[in-house]
Image 1 (cartoon, rainbow, N blue to C red):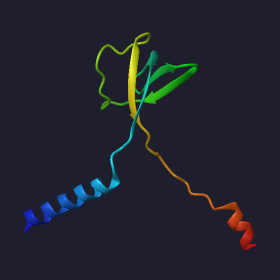
Image 2 (cartoon, rainbow, N blue to C red):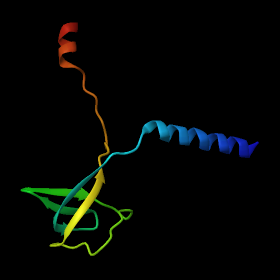
Image 3 (cartoon, one colour):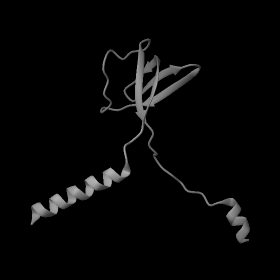
Image 4 (tube, rainbow, N blue to C red):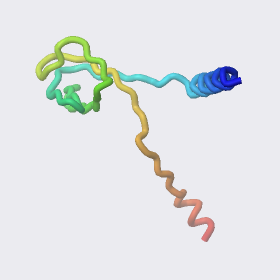
Length: 93
């Protein structure tokens, strides 16, 4: 009985993940300006790109200032605050 419940839970989680779709990834390539435990700064054209990193970030090669690197990243919302539609509020009054 416990095994059936566990397998059902796993199937539901797998189905939920499938509907969510794959996470889109992006890349930035350029010279590395700065490397810290929690961020890497890469120059792209005239812009400085600060990309957060943590203990789970996979790094191959010798990542240091002055080297060239390609950073693959995802965009994920940390929080979302929905605002009321100002036009809709004016129509109600």
